[in-house]
Image 1 (cartoon, rainbow, N blue to C red):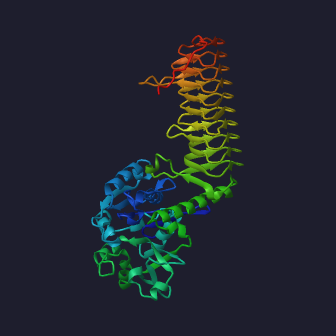
Image 2 (cartoon, rainbow, N blue to C red; image 1 turned 60 degrees about the horizontal axis):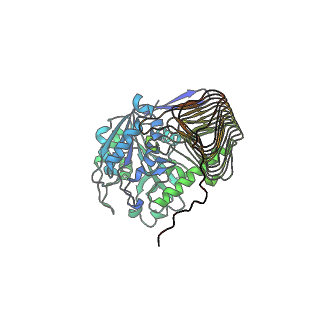
Length: 497
């Protein structure tokens, strides 16, 4: 066992646990190039705040403490963090969260200096950046293992164009320094191995090194990277763990970079699904995101697919979605927080959003095109929901059909019910919601209004254009209409000149 990391053999796999590990996330920058009032780390990638990605990854390490350095937009960022931690179990059981302010922002070294009072004198600190969202847990585990509680471990990558990045200066294999681009000589700028902004440092050395930082450089800032030369001077080994995965370490500084990283991330998710057997019509036009309303929770989107699932182009999946065997999703659908069971077909341009209540589409059901399923919609087997039909907080039993231009809100619909075009369950009286019950084998004529609370008895029929305000007995024909009057020779009013 080394300080900070314990490697445990578990069957054929190797698991790692961490003792006395702190994580510092730098999230104080203004992000001027984003040209936005929103703090840079709260801009979203895959529906999730950049900082939310980093916090979620850090939480998987189950560190003892997480320190987030805020500055620009501090109140907004800290409020978001408070929402996120309520959804991440490890914050309750193991990890403490603390925010510290960097005001003014005087460089990366100055940022970590603000975290020093929150760090213990022993153990290891892992330093991350809030605008580098796709760093992966295994990469960080490898870096912590390289640190071992005694060495300064840097995460590096080789780039074709390293312009703007700090260069890794070596003497043979040994790392001697990190030189920022603006301070690098012409020869040093030829170096293509760069520092990613991620390091693991023993606290016993980190604290005195931070105290020695000076701002005698081109930008007049306190560079965190200067601790490398302090480590070399003090005889502490500096090790570089290289990654070949540039997407993991790409930062976001502009809308262009954000869009590029979004596409790279979505393409990876698409390829992972296709490797599992999912058929995507066009992996370049596929999106899996966090819940559109719940992105502040920091939770990622998750799509679970059974065998022989087909997804057409332009589809967006949000939150937690499962697709059963043989499900087909038509072009340009949005599906959020829903369970689509085996054999169901979602036709193009349909919108399914379960929010907190969820949506269930039963086996063999057909939805769309242009249908909308809202929270609490529960469709049984072989239910048909057609074009421009909206279902909210309603249960449809097997075989029920509403094929055209209908609103079903707060309704319980029985087996084999057929609902004609233009039907509305009027569930709201201006103050409270009420339920409509349509029992089995009922036929509702087109353009009817069922004013809740009301029950339509089993096997009954409601004539077209009826406004039903009272419950009906089983098997009855119910017609609620005014008498038709035709006035012959009637003249329309003429517009005055």
